[in-house]
Every structure is written in structure tokens, then in C-alpha cells.
Image 1 (cartoon, rainbow, N blue to C red):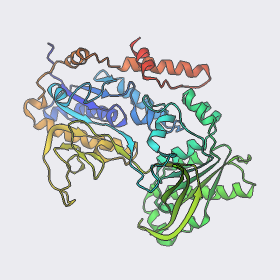
Image 2: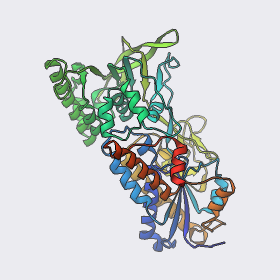
Image 3: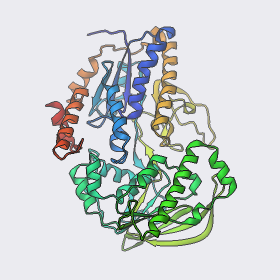
Image 4: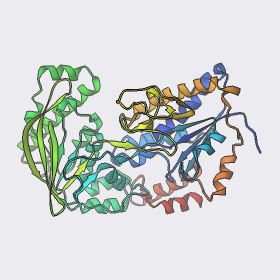
Length: 489
């Protein structure tokens, strides 16, 4: 057995939250470790259930986001660190248990993401033709265990949601397949599926007003440049009162989003005036309607299939409070996609806060607790913290915030981890088994063959080579068995 004196940290999830936290932990330890009595040496083992790293960046964001490859590149540089060891294709709770990790690591950090949709909760939500965004995103992003085919027969489609995922879904449904293939790493099955997509009319329904939407400016700019697509808005939605304009102006990001939406309003007017054209002035064969202050109340069906959607007009006050008007309108659609939020994954052996949809942690500080904070009456109650267990990213706070929030989360959690480790006996080195090869022997005894960073690089090299054959930068491998074969070759 090889004893080592470095701190040993296990991180569950190799998406942005897990990778950023690993990087920040090592940086903060180098900076503060001596002062805290911890030393500056640590080994971080990063466990990922999928055969490849990067989580949300690879599998949760639309492939045509230009910023994604830069984020993936930054994450990869972090993983190329001798103090970080990647264990892909290892599932927590199945291949390795919490007790087995606590025996070998001084602390365990959960950075698990979200793979399920929040339920739609409307009459007709169970009709054939109603889809959650998560499964559709899995399809177009080539998720290893996702669908390989997607029904795109509907000519008229509704998308429900006022955030970036709704924008992604709507954009991909309006995309030209050749344009998408040229710019992205989509696999062949997604290209063929989008090529056959029959959608010609899309309605995006946002419950609140222009000033309360949650779109990023980047999303809006990508919406503006869709070949063959005419954007159509209701000018009444942009008739904002002075209080709303003043409130929106207080927050820089909200102000920028509203300004971009007004740019889109002008574009939409020009597209109509020029004879129903797209952003380049070419004839548009698809129409993309954006409806604010519109709350879907029922999915309409016949013979078990979607035939329409019933929407109630709403009003939104300057402080964001929404009220119903009792005015309804029905739209013929044959498919409904809902992007109203994700439900972050549970973790075996860890309490889950159902009310807030994240792993139970104390006052949002990332320290895992024995139970959720809410008492029977819904009031927060102090609960016992479980030592050496932490959560970050969506696992900590629920499915809100962008990658910037994930970085600030990571710094907070790492600060708490270092503080706790410094208070623990023997300078935080509390795991009984300090042999760095112990985890490898355990996994090998179970027939688990992890994919390490070198294995990921082999998959990446193959994807780049396949992309180059078609003049593309990258082309995704989607079959997990093919990934394993490439990684272990």
C-alpha cells in the first residue's frame, strides 16, 4: 500500500460545476493551505457517469452556441492537470458507494447536473405530441443514452418557456439542417432528422412581459440570424409603462436584454414590410411568432394527439407580478415542447429538497444536510450538517443561473470545504484509506473500466478527424460502446 499525505477529494460530476470546483480547490489550497494548516498538496478524483466529460456544455446546450467550444476548451485545460484524475464511465451509487468514497477521500463534492424536466402540469400534458425540452436537447446533442430518432412531423409547433432553454429548442426547430451541420458538431442522425423537420410555424409563449423574460442577449442575437425564418411579434407587448422601464433599467443584464428585444421588434417590422423575408432579405418559408404575456392553460387533443393549445393573456406589473385577464386564444399546433425548468438529479444516500429542487444543503452554503430545511409547515428549520459532504452548481442551488453563477458557487463551496478541513483532526486528512490506487483496485474488482483523460483525448481526436472529412471542426460520436472502444484502444 502506498500512503500519501496529500488531501484527497472526490468530485461527482465532470460538468462545468465539477471541473471549476476542482480547479478552484487546487488554486485556493495553494494560496491558503499553509495558513490553514492543510499544506498545499491535493489529489482530486473526478467521477462522471457518462463516458465523456463536460456535462451540460457537451449535452445540455444547443450545438450552435459559438461560446460553447471556448468553454469546453477551458474545461479541457483544467482537466489536463496531474493533480486532477478523470474517472468517466463510473456511476456513483452503482459502481461506487458513498461509504466507499468516504473511506478513501477526505471530502466528497456533488456537482451532479439535471437530466429531467419539471412536469408541465396542464390539462392535456400527457397527449401524444407533448415533449419535455430535456429529452429533445438530449436528442439533438447526441446524449449517449438519449433517443436516436425524433418525431418532427408537426407543421405547427408551440414552445412554452421564457428562458434560454426555450430559446434553444425553438431555434433548433426552426433551423436549416445544412446551415446547422456546417456550423456545428451534430451527428448524422440529428442532421437527417432536422432535414426532414416539417415545422413551418412556431409559437413561443412567454408568461410574463418583455421586461421579465430571462433570455440572455447572446440567445436573442442567435435568434435574429436564422436563415429562411421570419420573426413575428405583437407590438402591444412592447408598450411598456414608465415604471416597468425604470425597473428594467436598474439591472444591467435586464436592460441589455430589453434593448435587444426592441431591436428584434424593429427587425420583425422590417421583415414584414419587405414582404415576409428573413434577416438577410430572402423569402422566408418558416414563421416564428414570439408571444409575451401569454400563459398556456391547456393542450388541446383529439384521439390522444395534440391539435392545439389554449393560451390566456396575462398582465405583468413593473415588479414582475403576473395576473390573469380571462382572455383566451387557441392556436392550432400538432406538437408542444415545454422548457419550464429542469429538476436536478438526486444522489443515492443524499437527502433531496423537493421544494427547491436540489440536494439538501444548509442555507444554500453547499454543506450537505441530513434532511431538507423546510419543516412540516413550510418554514425553514435548522438541520444537522453531514460532515465531509458538499454540493455545488445546480445540485446545490437548483436549475437556475448560467456558467458565471457556477464559478461563484464553486468559490463559496471551496472556501467552506477548506474551512472545515482546517478544523478537522490531522489537518483535514481524515479518510482511513490513503492509498491513491485503492479506488482503481476497487473499480477493477467490479469489472468497471474507467475512461481517463487520455481516453477522452482519443475520443476527441477521432471526432475531430471525422469532422475534418466533411470540412467541419468536430463531429460527435454518440454510441457509448464506440466511445469505450476508442478510449480503451
